[in-house]
Image (cartoon, rainbow, N blue to C red; front, side, top):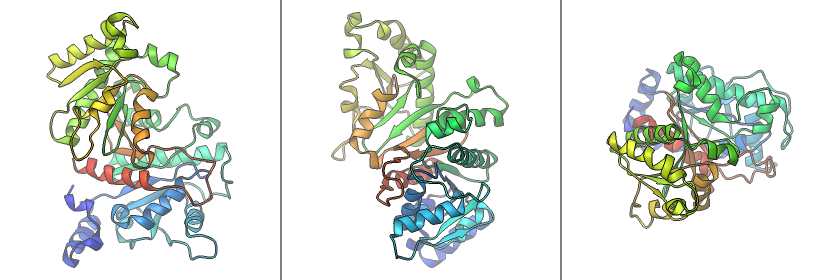
Length: 371
């Protein structure tokens, strides 16, 4: 992929813009699919705002979803009585390159939807959100799109629709495994949450805390370190400096507060080091994130922190600013990013949702495609 993807066509000289558009039309540059998310949540609104406010980032992107839902969202963010942001129905992904800035291209993935009320959990909304993700994942696996950026879905709606997955990560893992002809266990994935200051990768994702503690095994920790080394290293262009958080307070304090660090986490770290990985720890979880944080233009002591469970790793990143956090799925044979917030039913339909995290996810997807 060319580095020009990160630049708006409008910011290029006319001949540069023409070359980029020509390359896109020849299929040399693939578009990015943005999935609709739960139509009862804020996903469609943030998508409309992203196209309105960041035409450089969204050029060459399209919405895999429902045109009526996107038109409703475009009107919501424009305000009552104001002309809505234009929405264009496209016939195939490549058409996204021909749509002018601040016009939202939509590829109709589902049947035309009836009116879906805001802030209501429903099986229909869950099915629509899942269908859009499945279509985009398959398009990415076929090579028809460069990446997918997923607007938030609602886990209860997903379950109501009969989907056996607790979230995007597990759904995409299953789809990738089916595409590769492998079992799910043979396509291990991990969640990374990142912003400009901090990256964290999780050993376990959507599990209860009791189950998450049981998931801290030698194999799971070592596998997480390998995936982190490979994926973050590809993005950085060098081996990443990986810190590993302990599970227990003070990283177990030499066994006084638990032996997981001694019996499980440290042996996995030693095995990773034997493979040449730059890994440090286990370190006290209440200080390791501060040590890894980049600030005032200076890098942190580590490039990424491996956390033992969901909240241990995600709270520090989200505290630094939900509006800039990006969720990246590591280990997939495709690029997938998403904003780090949920469907926010409490503000859906009001037009006040912040699109910053979605815009950051689109920009990161472009960076990862180029890596």
